[in-house]
Image (cartoon, rainbow, N blue to C red; front, side):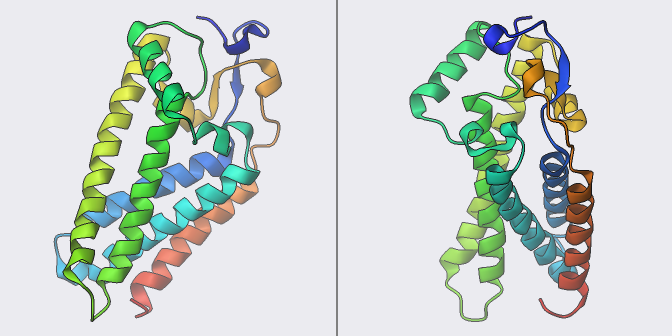
Length: 213
């Protein structure tokens, strides 16, 4: 297994900080809650609250792309088409260097975030009394985009896990990956992670049960 940039021996170090990983987990839980409460109109306030919290968490993730650890930054989310194609070829040919992320996974990650943001925005708009039918269609299409992006992301992550012989889902959960020692982060920022989790839970409770929605 070759390490990116060839700097030092392969070593598992922390490359993803706590707020980034906590945000991802909270987004997944919020979307799961939104899907689970979608079928029954009696759960409409809770359903919309889940969607809005997911969208707000995406907003945090976008901000964290400017302030977070190196692998949370924009350069790992925004890529040119040529870089994405090269990343796909590298994965398909089972060649190339080992990185915690790559243009293909980063682009699919960004697509998931955009779909989640669209779900929250169209979900809120659909609650307005005078709203056009296209908003409801856009809301459904946003969920469709989410499922497509999620399916592609899981396929790529599974393929990369097999090619690189490292479970990327577990790596993201733990925050550690094989990388040069100089890329290891020192501060996991647990305080920010805790504040984010409490804010998401409290925000959902207020939105769902205060009569705001």
